Length: 428
Ligand code: CMC
Image (tube, rainbow, N blue to C red; front, side, top):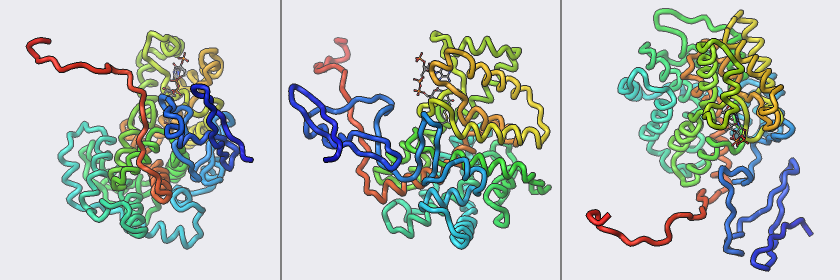
């Protein structure tokens, strides 16, 4: 007989099946807990709750393991292109040469955005944060493609929306930056690969073509791969939950971008650089800021440290740290912020506060530094994360719809007033 878990409530014992994943992770299946017992579970922040079964990404926070569809992140970051990884995540297997060529061709067929979309950009203030612009413009794409409003229309229609998103998001992301600079938009170059085309739209000007350094293209390829998926994190869970209501895919991805924006999630890469700049301007006294981070009466936290799941090391951080050193050396960049970053890293590895709480530098600690070295402006860092995470969100949404998962709708334990009678305003 397969393993079960027993729960005793009000003197009665209930049995629940234990399910085991392919990596031997175990869960108690409580899908019928409430109907059997009348109880629900309470798990604020979903620290112990599996919201789904998934065959996309595996991560083991204790061992520092991350795999996409079974392939270790180290191998993919070293050897693959971002589009190969995107294909792997979305369709389940690494593409053959023909599949990859077709995928690339189909995406490049959709890199242009409707000319009317350009007018939207003009309406935003110059100081608009590009994440706000990106999220709202992606949602607006649904108005240009009304047939996408029904996400279950057909497999072909679903795939067309996926290809449109993969093609247009880099264009929109680069245009959000150009708009903030009040520079003319650069149109996509379909003869360039995905990363090079993005850098072209960001940095070239109509008056001068921009030489794009292959070191920068390689680093961007790696960064996008490292960010491509991370199982049921905050933005991905948002995508799955919004998508579960059968909202269209543009609106669903826009919600993922909104969730990613926060400094505790993808916004941490921007927050890291802002923190390093603050420490630098304050005289560079790292110990003073470490003390602040440890002080429970001070809301300051060391940005780029700690992770909900990784409690040993973040394998993405290990890869990116090396890439960061390579890029800084190849581009011959000497950045005082990097010295502060190195001191902070040393403290975290030695200080009891950080050691006892398993707080290590995470991927965003280094990605901020690397993006800065690549010439990407700070406010664009989280947009870069979104660009990388796009295929992961799409894959998770696709899996959720293909599995016909029910609408996401957690319960709660109500702790408010039981009953109060209405009192007219004059008597309050
Ligand atoms: N600096 C100082 N103390 C910290 C930090 C930090 N960065 N992170 C956690 N702690 C302390 C926290 O105060 C708590 O201490 P105590 O046990 O004494 O109350 C303990 O460590 C556990 O923290 P928690 O907030 O319960 O942990 P969590 O799993 O809920 O939060 C986290 C994880 C990532 C939100 C948090 O570590 C954090 O705020 N880090 C800084 C923001 C950051 O870098 N976010 C990017 C995450 S990686 C990108 C991504 O995948 O989204």
